[in-house]
Structures are given as C-alpha cells and as structure tokens.
Length: 177
Image (cartoon, rainbow, N blue to C red; front, top):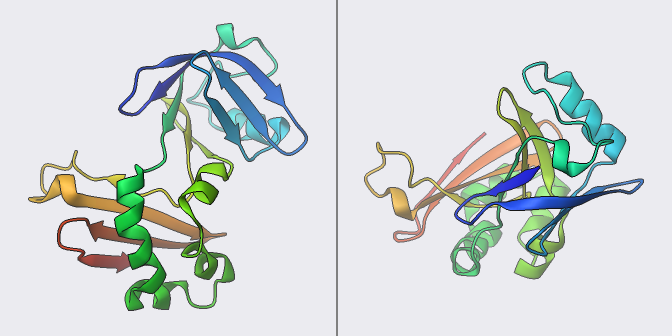
C-alpha cells in the first residue's frame, strides 16, 4: 500500500496499527497518518462502498491498494485564514449555535496538526485521509481568475456543513451553508 500525498512524493505504508479508537498508518518516510476511527469502523466504511475493492485492514499493508492523503495547510496559509475564521461576522454567524465550530477559531496550528485525520471513501478511487478544518487551494479550478489565492474549507458539526472560501490576497470571504 502506498500513500499518495498531495504535492509530495508517495510513501509506502509499512505498518497499520489498530487501536480501540483509532487506526494509524506508519509510512516509510517516518510520517504517521492517525485516523480518528477504530479499525472496525474504518473497515465498515470501506466495505460499504462497493466500487472500492481490496482494502482490508486485517491484511498486511503490502497487499493493499493506494490511499490518498491531503496534508494540513501550510503555516503561512493558517496565519492568514485563522484570524479571519476567528473574527469574520459571516463565519461567526454560520457557526452560531454550534459550540464545536465556535471553538475552532481558538485552535493553534499545532493543535490542528494533532487532531486525528478524517477518512472518507470515494469510489472507484479508494480511501482519502485529510485533516478536519483544512483550507486547501482551489488553484486547480480554471474558472477562478485568482485561483492560486482561493482557499476553501468545509466545517462540519455532525450533519451541519459550512463551506468557507477565503482569498489570501484580497481577504474576501464567501460562506455557504
């Protein structure tokens, strides 16, 4: 099994640790991908998607297909977006009534890095791992004239979803619910 890492070289998964409340993928480059789901829950998520075959966490990593990992936003992106998340009236209005979301603005970069990864399955490609509350570049969208400066993040509290778009250059904010 290899971890395909956005904007970085892929790395082989050498070990999968199974804990009661999380699953940890050890990569050959020394990185750990700590998923906030028990192995049984992660396997159930994988098994529900009929178009994703071959990921069986009980088997050795060398026999598994690839997983995909989106690293946490770079520190300079955090330094721009997080004060906006913490104070922007549109964002704060969307977060109102959701204590989990209201508390997000107070998280430091290091606290975000230590949060367990979220896992989702997308057929036919497989398992995707990403940090919760991670702003990612929308540069790939050719319809955006200022694409490299556009970043988005999905903020979830259960079934409640808030999408926040921030332009790093202009500090323009768009919030959708």
